Length: 384
Image (cartoon, rainbow, N blue to C red):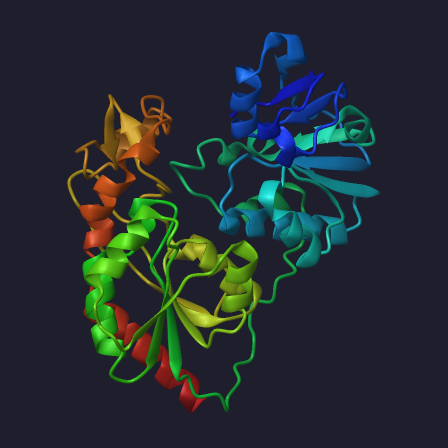
């Protein structure tokens, strides 16, 4: 990811959303902005430079947390939760968050964090902080986050020695009978997306007893596959307009069936019940200290890996794109080599291929086990 500074003398239309003022010096990590700036005429650029990230030796009193670019909403929630805990811990006089990108509303409205900077931060604002903390640079476990998922919230609060303030147990509403189940099959990655066959079979079982709504996103190509393949007219499809609309909708659900994706983390914000279908990332990491959502463990195993392997996405290995099992690569050896020979660049071009032919841990999801987990969880809820 680039960390760079820039100053330009003229604002082109393609840069309007970044709220740039001419001849000011800014810092950013946004990949799209970096590409746009590099396309500008040199006559419009005062300066454009890579910036070196410096390791923190002495922690000051005014800290600016710099987030990684292109976060999903789930990661944004985990970062916001941790930074909120640090802010509430009063170990710093001032806490700011740089590069929240499209999630400014989330950090401000749901976590009451005020000093947020979307895509850029100017030199004057940056200098109001005496500690510039790049999270994925300073916290070692985040370096290979795409290939070995760790618990973002707990890694951060443990680094700063902050007590976990999240509730570990929430009383159930004993009088509430669940009549509707909301299913969230999509993820930003094919290895964490529910296969169409699994969704079809599961909904055929559940629709006999519950109202079923399926959350999709028509802007994603994979959603079009779901629309075409799922023909049961008793199902309702929900297509939120944007991230804020999605959050509002999840706030109203009764019970959810989740993959490892943004909706899972939103549901945790609102203490929702449900089940998580484990694929490549451990449910023990995703649901640590959260008892309202039950993990359905994945038992997939092959000569090359064992679920959950820790991957968050497919990868590029010698110009082939997939996961350990689909590419027949020994995961233990790759991990011993510290992921040196695998890359993330260009993988989005191969998402549909891996959606259509799901990886082993996704393909092996057992519909009957999922159904039994849902029914068992709901029977316990109603008997409580």
